[in-house]
Amino acid sequence: QVQLVESGGGLVQPGGSLRLSCAASGSISRINAMGWYRQVPGKQRDMVASITWTGTTYYSDSAKGRFTISRNNANNTLWLQMNSLKPEDTAVYYCYGDLSPGGTSYQDYWGQGTQVTVSS
Image (cartoon, rainbow, N blue to C red; front, side, top):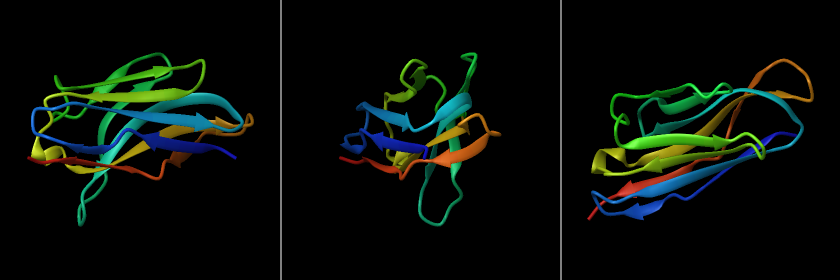
């Protein structure tokens, strides 16, 4: 069974930094892409950053220049370094993976989410 487990959320002051981690475990044969999404109450879940198996990265306009996505393919770990945080970055952040479990077709997997609160 594939699981994505996030960590690293918390309370930070405006201008501060946080680093989110996501550990993917289980019988993962292939990874097409992984990424970070965020959601605030009453709104849809939006993509923040993603990275393909080949290392191509994508960022939302709000994340460009402040956030950096990276990964370790050897142990299926994903990170999101968030700098210059703003109150509007406050949200629940979810790890996402487009993964192939046990050699089957690619499927979408989500972590349980981690709360990030930017406030003074």
